[in-house]
View 1 (tube, rainbow, N blue to C red):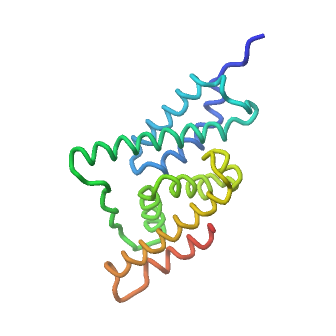
View 2: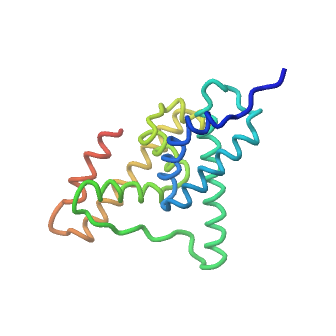
View 3: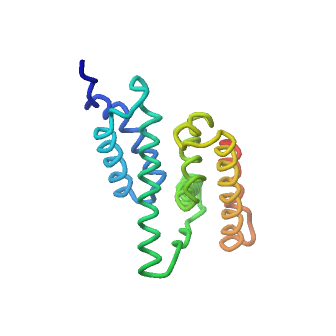
Length: 185
């Protein structure tokens, strides 16, 4: 008896969540689209490796995270080779309202180190538990908790720094970002 194939129905069922996670991992919609497409191409090619076919979302997130790590490594190698730079500058944004601040927050999340960025995206965008994320990232649950904590601390620090540069007289950015970060911890 042959094993069931990866179907269009599975793609339709999981595409939205995988695309949303890819969008938060990447700062460019086109890169997110490419990452999502490549995730499903790999899933089709390697469907025989999926252990839990009734609930393949954890496996799909794992593919997405591995592809994102590979993509970022390629970008870093190219940047170091062609510019000598290891990091892009963080995007400066407007702190006028919470929508723009939330957008800036996710842009800054995209700049975090791999493990922190991936843990934060899976935890707060996708609502996965620390245990599920540990399974996806192939690490201990305590490592996920640490990555989330350190990532949130970096975000708080960066927003406080940018606030001092942009708004030395008022706490606009901190007033907006702290409730967002506190709600998600």
